[in-house]
Length: 429
Image 1 (tube, rainbow, N blue to C red):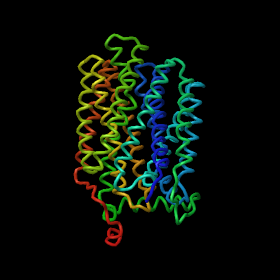
Image 2 (image 1 turned 180 degrees about the vertical axis):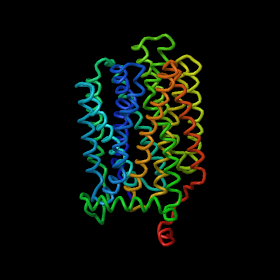
Image 3 (image 1 turned 90 degrees about the vertical axis):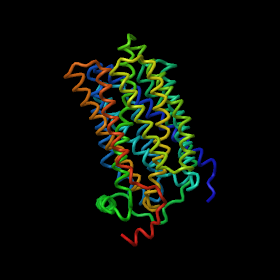
């Protein structure tokens, strides 16, 4: 199968586009906006609850959306609509009072997450089995260049005018997404079925439940999904609170809030730089040794990263140490997404990729609900009840998240990434 280079480049460019949103809004400026509105003591709890609500919405609808795209003639219209909704809502963030802004963020993030699910399911359209790890890794590496744009906007224009920053992020997201809309061809669904309606919901839900119960037909699927809950729980949570953590560590070392926010952006840039390189390297490694072995190595790297990050807050280490930990986190980020997208494709039958990526997305969203709630609970207990400083309380939270990484490593142990003979498995089931 010949895949146009323009299609591959356009698919990769969307990874850059959506990373502008995830870094600029989810990981950096919205959490800082919340901190400015509610104060340092309540910021972790409030932001954790807001994020959990947003992810709860997409958690509920992810499998249904995946099944709908398997029924539809094409997936691209779903990606276009979700992106446009996210862009429009992002443009309104911080332009009104607190609660309208929170609602805008909740639904913008839900739309972004839905688009990410549709985008991941289009990986087979621009890859073959032989180069899937490499293309996925390049997507991750180039995608993190979008973080330079998001962080660079704040460094160049300052972080005081947050409505302007959110508007600039929205425009950049849309501009870099357009090539994917125009130039990624789809083979299309040879057997399209109705996409909307109550019967579709019932059939899709029943099919998803059968999938989860069908252990013999889909070996390793359920265990992989459960393991993914734990490692994405930890990683997504630490990404979303990294800016808050950095500001608190910086202020504990004597810097004021403005200097702390600037330090947070510089540390983010350090993490991004290593994530770009990591995406290329890990993608190459996936094609050489397979997604399972690659993911195992990455998870051990995350164990070391979380241990180092937790010690910074608990022991009051200098904020400069965060540059080292952030660099390790950047390498780990490149590895996680380079390895687990191809891993999921090994576990998914070709005719149900959308549904399976719906499940893949669903567990990611579940972790994005529970992770912020765990973080908020630890912050409430350690900072609000036990009187710890924000930096020390967050250090405890990081160590709790480290435990989730270790649990995921144990769960994923027996899962193999060997290619499946889907016809034989269907006959046996």
